[in-house]
Length: 420
Image 1 (spheres, helix red, strand yellow):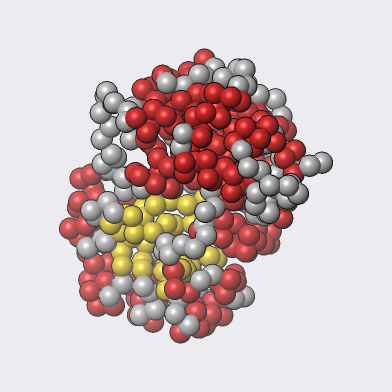
Image 2 (image 1 turned 30 degrees about the vertical axis):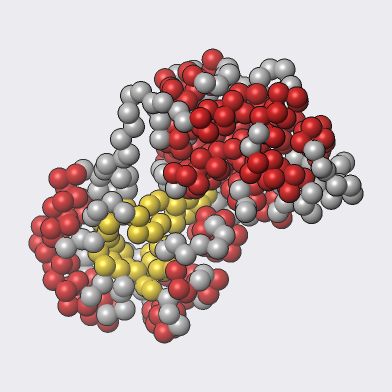
């Protein structure tokens, strides 16, 4: 098999087993001004698939294999990583980067002496420590002295509990994180009571106008995407569009002449490049390169990563089991569902410029038809809504272990494809 026929990108083979049957996701943590402070990592073992011991094992494996994928490459983002006290006692957190990690000990009671000793050692080495609120936490000064953050579901707290937490915060100087507090009034009340950070959806998503005029550069990129996904593959019109964009032309030639392909001969023309690449692989890569230029202008690199990850996940799943659309179309379903967010334009306006199967359009714009359930699966996974995710998997007759494996592969593929 030649390099151009190989369906895997670099690193995929090594990441096939990453994460095992455990799902790993992340959710944004915002401050009161809705600026991103960092991310909370979420682990999940599918129901009925794990004994208590294997839960610990899967969480440890998620730390080793899945967390670097979620953190990305060369990043300084802050990560809140939940960890059972039993794993903390075994030193599992040493795989994390001390300068960007806050280790949240997952206990509804005081940690064991072994876990507490391990946390003190982690803190001495520069790692921050977080605690989950539990009723007797107020009585344990030795824990509060250790905490850099205390997280709590405010819905589970009384007014007295919230006041007490605010008092302890002043005494011990830790951050307060409110979880799943998406109501604007409740968030303001929590902020007034002393909470600093909030886990959940942003309350004021970017305002997208009902009508949108695309710039000439945006229209050029939409024309390239349109040529890519016409039913009839036309090399010459696509070649002309790419040659007219010096940056895109350079990136394509550099990509083909890289070690990834090892073609053995230099590729010195766009037409030759298009003929050498396998059609699906070329489409996926060119789509991401074209959109990466948009992301550079709008600061939406994270959205682009989600697009690539969604598309690849649905493509991999469709290669293994019956799906409402062919694998390539499932890739478009996942990636195009975020085009409006990437381009800061109404999704209907963006999709109007592109050739698209009616089932994809209906699933993305109207959330109707069998393909819509696949999008719902992606959204549940991204948000860490694992109960809904398991229901989606049952509805689609997808094995959780297979979905978790493909999710790990999809993220590695997205990172590799978008690497500078």
